[in-house]
Image 1 (cartoon, helix red, strand yellow):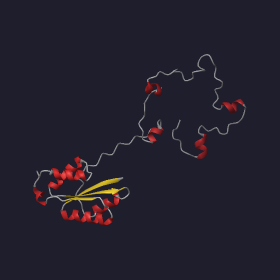
Image 2 (cartoon, helix red, strand yellow; image 1 turned 180 degrees about the horizontal axis):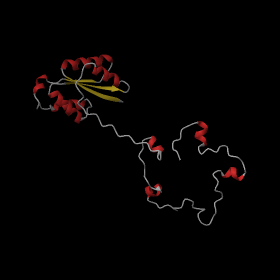
Image 3 (cartoon, helix red, strand yellow; image 1 turned 180 degrees about the vertical axis):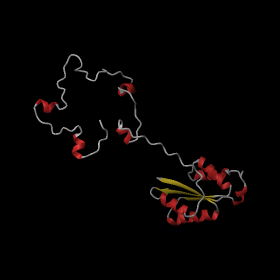
Image 4 (cartoon, one colour; image 1 turned 90 degrees about the vertical axis):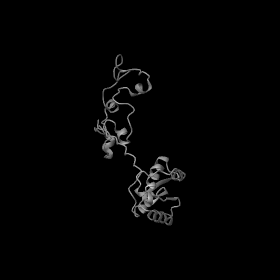
Length: 198
């Protein structure tokens, strides 16, 4: 896996020196495109299609190649390097030491982050969108299949009484004390913060 790094320079000598330093450091996939200094004063300098094609053969997106070629037509020179994973920052630092021009390719916008919501701790922690919001029966909404009942207690809501209303039915049945009266025994035992406060 590689990362492509491109830097523009104001003179061919800067670009050549930067490319030579990259090669001497061990980078093998280095490409140099020298601009025409005579076009520095020509604001309407035409883009050379051959230069665009050569950059595309060096595995540069066409849209980026056209931007770079426009700068080359105005006298700038370009150095491209395909750096393997883990070596990109070193290549960037090396190229910056030769005083490059400002970056020509606009950086992609930073995606907006989700706002943490205590009611949706899992989605907020992993920055995942909710499948559904403000719906009492999400499975019914997503699948289109009606729920069997809208009642919170299907089997005890009319003709069967609840076996117990206790929060600790086993302890209540055998008259045993509960191990803890805390509503959050696991978090309290391990002293962990709650993902969600009830």
